[in-house]
Image (tube, rainbow, N blue to C red; front, side, top):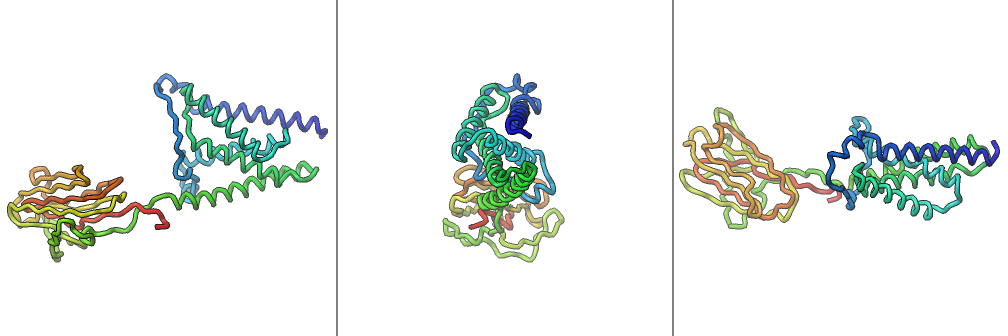
Length: 311
């Protein structure tokens, strides 16, 4: 094929593909139907810790968002190949112009209510273009067009897998996971209380046998006891079990507060005569206060901290 004819063909493909992407940007997925329902501009300037790259488990059990994340990268690989074929350009210049173009499009999406400005999309789209440019540099080195196309396609796939693996590991490093269970009695009570109870062989609540594994908090009669622990400003899930043993009068209460905010308040009148459990998410927890009154019994109180894998 003559060079001028090749250029015309590449130019036509670029125009067609650009129009296709513009269609998906502004008109696909029912965007025009939802314009009247949107009254506020959406601008997301802060990226995720690292934009999400679908992992192997996601590929085996994909969701819609997994396809969107992967598509935001793959759909822009062709631009990294087509544009350098049409115009001589360096990687830095190409990426600078591409990122500026994406920023303009994202802004238009937000201002027209046909989408949102999302910096995560900018990052993903730009990464796709960068992969395409790298594949172009690796593939188009000879005068054999079919060989160039084949090598470029393979290079795109290899680079995509490489980026997927690298950013998948980075994403994993900056994604918190729930840590092991820590019994609350392993911490020091800041009030000096040491009466966390001796773990009995079992409790019977509502006819059910309960066997505490870590700790038991309970008092007799109308007394009230307060326990305060310092958690160290951690993000965690606090878990606790509570109830009134069968052999005791059905009266008492439990109150749990964290940094002065009440997260649990239960009295005997409000609960069923059976064991109950609560798991409370705390984005930042420093001072935990537990107040027990009457015959309420609390057991296996502890937390699982959200931690990075490298902690």
